[in-house]
Length: 157
View 1 (cartoon, rainbow, N blue to C red):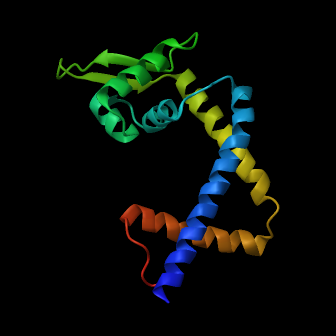
View 2: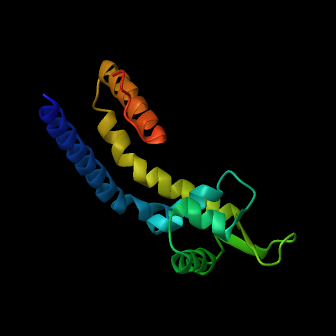
View 3: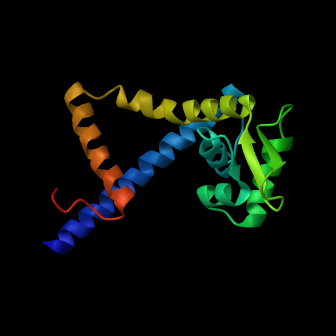
């Protein structure tokens, strides 16, 4: 019985991966509409900065999950690739060894456009579901989100 459950979980994980891959592939066509061709790491950096005043380079690197050299390349791209900077880097006034990073208004627009392009394919697919199916999916996604936050599946389900 446990083996069957493991096989089912494996199959569902593969289905989730395939759906994610297909929606991200479809969104590739739409991301250019906003004019921002961000890499995944660039998006994650802007996303981490979106609701805070600043983060140090080290804090930002932790949020994005990249190596120091990769973070340097990400920041360079966000500062130099567009006609206006998407982030600003400045020396921390309290600790001159640290660099603080903040998102610019154009950076906020870029992360919003990128997010919108990425979710548009999902919105079109979800629109085909009934209200009952949407409610069921919402409950399931909530449980999956909780399991991802805690690192353990919900034993009561």
